Image (tube, rainbow, N blue to C red; front, side, top):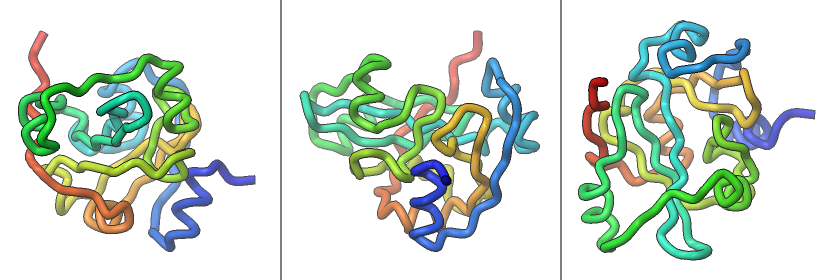
Length: 156
């Protein structure tokens, strides 16, 4: 039986390529395992607007959410990220496997504008499993709002 993410992709008719890989400990490892560049490993971040109001933010792997940009886009003064249990309750997926496809609630999706025109990989709802998709097709399927909501990943 396919995962909820795969079932949702199939139901939507969105073409994808399944990428199975072993455990990874970083975005760079995930990119290598998936055979893509780090920016093409898309992070699905769950953001909480209020107690039972969340959204998904899709960010390139080499970028992080810009909280001021995201708050301005949404017209709010406060946003937060749920803890692991809250993310699981909001999406049906554990951290590290979260995807908007097949989530237990179809929260709104915001995609960073830098994803447009790319082939990307997203989590597929299970550890060690991803899907490679056309970003523009995924954005359209998810009816995502596209905006500049990220900043470069800080260097360490």
